[in-house]
Amino acid sequence: MKITDVDVQVVNLPLTNPFTSSFETKTGETRTVVRLRTDTGIEGWGETMWGRPVAELARKLATELVGTSPFALEAFHRRHHMVPFFHGYLGYAALAALDVACWDVMGKATGQSVTDLLGGPVRDEVPITALITRADAPGARGRELAQGLAEYAAKVVGEGGFSAVKLKGTNDVRGDVEIMRELRRALPDVELRVDPNAAWSVPDSIRAGLALEELDLEYLEDPCTGIEGMSQVRAKIRIPLCTNMCVVRFEEFAPAVRLGAVDVIHGDVYKWGGISATKALAAHCETFGLGMNLHSGGELGIATAAHLAVVASTPVLSRAIDSMYYLHADDIVQPLTLEGGRLRVPTGPGLGVQVDEEKLAFYAAANERDGDLTG
Ligand SMILES: O=C([O-])C(=O)C[C@H](O)[C@@H](O)C(=O)[O-]
Image 1: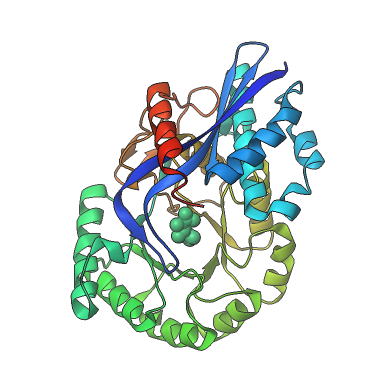
Image 2: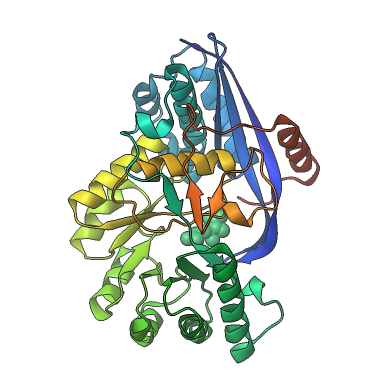
């Protein structure tokens, strides 16, 4: 079987609420969508983070994929191992779009789900995390903000059945600690996390970490920058540390372990360059006794389905994953099933998703008109 052609589109989709972190506020998401066609008439879909620069690189890499087998993925990654060196996240993202589309083809060609190709399911549903940001209590400040966010989070958890809540932190360290206290008061039984995306200094992270200890957090995510800073914080506080910022490639794994910088590492198919790389990260984490979870960069249905296949087939991925899937106002695939805060893992061949081509065209036109919203 050979790949005969590849098309790449960029879509803009709105979020139900603005999403605020320590470095951005976004009201929608831009994603790159790839379709492979083969000489046997099979179509495979991939989706990755960000827009036009990733799409341009994916188109370039795709020209070399044409004429090759979708099963020859290791050779594809080997040929392009310098792409992330030169292009950083853009490189990982572009490779991942094509990688995921090849997995979709491999599943459809063999009549198996990607989960089955990856070793088979150890779970058939995946809990996701309620993501709370300051934009969820617009205009509120101080105590009113902390209480407003706690009330909002309790409503989201009550209605959606989520078992974990993550606050996107900011450089307002005291404010973040106050919000976390209110969240714990309102939600005594959920797993709680806070993630300022490295906006806190090392001393502030230690001070905040000591104050947060009594709240029994599942983990504190990227309080500060770098392996060195994280290891200083980890030595002083009794809350597990998680990262999707100081260990973002395999070269950083060994120094992070040696310096004791982290307890839980976030994978992400689109930031680590594909499905096999994310599975390899899981093997590293298991070998070294670390926890692992998945980061979310705003995946729509195609990309979410690939994340679900990885989680479904990987025992160490036992926590509620980050997923912005439920925050999108619409999707380009028939909606995935979300019930009781859990996404059901699709079981059909390949990724098991049905792309709605009318919606794809509609949201691609939005990107043509408005340009990229993220990335
Ligand atoms: O750890 C996280 O939640 C992130 O880094 C998510 C970012 O805030 C998110 O906006 C993204 O990557 O699109």
